Length: 56
Image 1 (cartoon, helix red, strand yellow):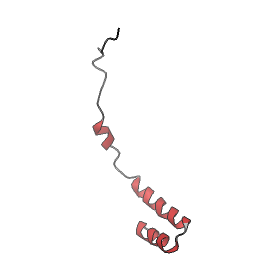
Image 2 (tube, rainbow, N blue to C red; image 1 turned 90 degrees about the vertical axis):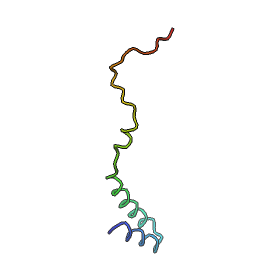
Image 3 (cartoon, helix red, strand yellow; image 1 turned 180 degrees about the vertical axis):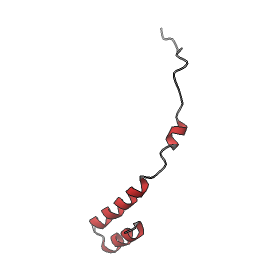
Image 4 (cartoon, helix red, strand yellow; image 1 turned 90 degrees about the horizontal axis):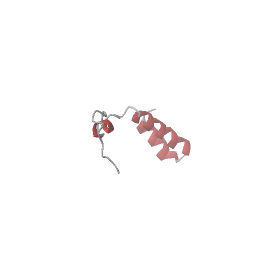
């Protein structure tokens, strides 16, 4: 069963189990999402410059 068929089944019946089947298919498809986008936005601080602001 694909996502469209699962949604059609839920839409037709309105049963919670049909909705859960649809969400399960949708979530399994989303697991393949690209998670490297967050890594590009992070500040890459390798700690080479260890001199930081001195607090007194």
